[in-house]
Length: 208
Image (cartoon, rainbow, N blue to C red; front, side):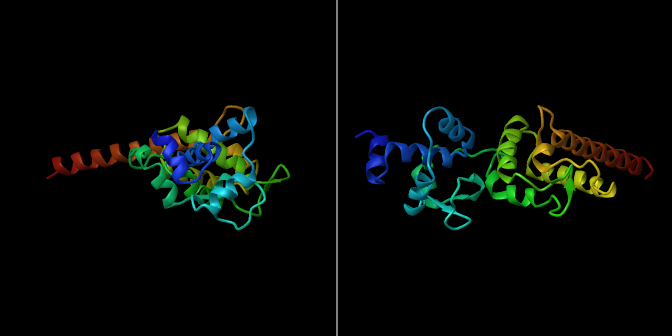
């Protein structure tokens, strides 16, 4: 029997549920959105069915809307697609964005407004933009992203948060990413610190 068909039968999944499970397993949230927009919509009931079957869990109980950041993959889902699990480079930012996007989002102050809007806004939009950002900028891992964001927020605080970017716009707006610029600055500072350290070591050795 075909392995694909066997998995569907053994796990009592429909082909549609199997497709959704696989896309969730691979963190292909952008593909899910394309499927919803161009083929047919996945409904909230589809996600709740996978939850009842033990393939996913919800961080918040009984959700009424589809928010990918609210979905946790279970061991049962990983077991279903274990042959597709590819070990990615350590520190790769595309690994488990859903596990840290909340922490990143919460770096933005909750009571600060810019242009009349709270800077901590549109969590779903942030999640979608961060997925794209990480794919477009594989050199910037989670640690660099967090460091760059903290630096920007501290700088904004020192200016009383005037003209501070809203969280999703900080990631990208109109094709321009302030986050990418801040990440590049972090990388450059790290390189400069390494050069300074090397120079000091050479100086110390020569002075012995």
